[in-house]
Length: 532
Image 1 (cartoon, rainbow, N blue to C red):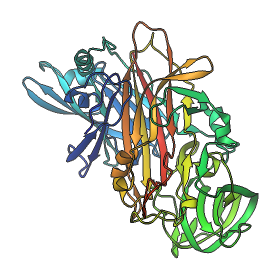
Image 2: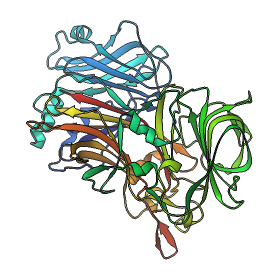
Image 3: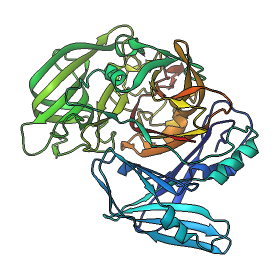
Image 4: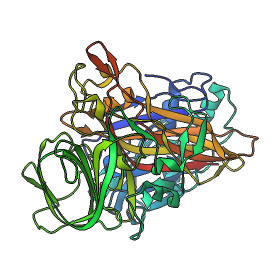
């Protein structure tokens, strides 16, 4: 475990919930690289975001503020969240109390948030309790699902600031509403096939000045038009754009990713790789991106490995490394065909797709993948059988959210991110010489035409690869909370940013190949909770 240092407090909890009304049987806490390091924090930092292991597969973020007895809930699971009761565990000098709270009938539609003031109900629980400390908080749905809520405590945050000697937080009161940056809201007329759409959804598209130790974010529209990604050999070239009827009947599909079309969840967005898809030559690696696909068959959306698939999997790695047949027929709003025979630098468009893995109309997550063909199992091989097919970033792709957080109004910010990661490196950490950042989340402030990075959290390859399986392909649902105190006595407007990149170009050492990393990253949710 690496301990976070300085003014970034990070903790990520993973929980296994096996019964519908019990505490988690197991949890795991880890921290990773942070910026602005000063003095080590104690183990108490774990309490800042304890119970953040909300069930990511259910797409629910819940935060309980012990200071003002307010529960914040964000529902993004493709269906309403119907709350049956709340379970709270409080530690007192007199002993531990476990209480069941019955709120008024609460139903939260998908994509919406709710703020519940529990002051009256909690007051009854705390009667006769000396030095109360909320140790756990759970939401129980009408279907019996148990969702842990993150507990944020004024007492713990104040202790952390005293220990660190930063003086940034003298008091933490109630949080504001949860601001959802991702998934982005989608309208029926939106053109999902160009990620420049993100600029119309509250983001500034930018790049970082460094892949490992960024200090500046510079707006950069070329990332969606002409630059950002390179290849060791041939690059992706868009050769055809069509719409209307489509039938795919091929003997070998290497990888397939698909989700709901967020404009209309009776349609689907699909991306797959194969060889020799017309008009590409018979030996040329090909990529096909299909938007707004509606199957004309009743058996399912598509057939892969001679099995009909009726809906997307929340595990975005589920249909990678298939090397099997693919059949689909129907109509599509847009069909893009890429051939791997181009040259030079290209944009991030061939590598990204806006989609949703849950039936939540009007919301889209962001998929980024550099996986083309296969995975590798030894140092003497490469994932795609040829180094010329390995992709890497020349510039990170960063999104700066335009929502402003004033250091005069707020004392801290909690940034929650839900994501899934899958890589083609069968050797995991043993296959790389350098542990490099794949994703970065943090705060920045505007300085003229650029943004200066205030603080951030890096998600590196060796960390991410621990929670996926290359083969059989599995991309586990992951959640993290980045807690950043804001500087006091300074009038500054901060913005949340998220960045991703493939920083790996292969390194050859004798007959061995290192840093041959291809991967898929799917960002499901990015939520912001500022604290006064």
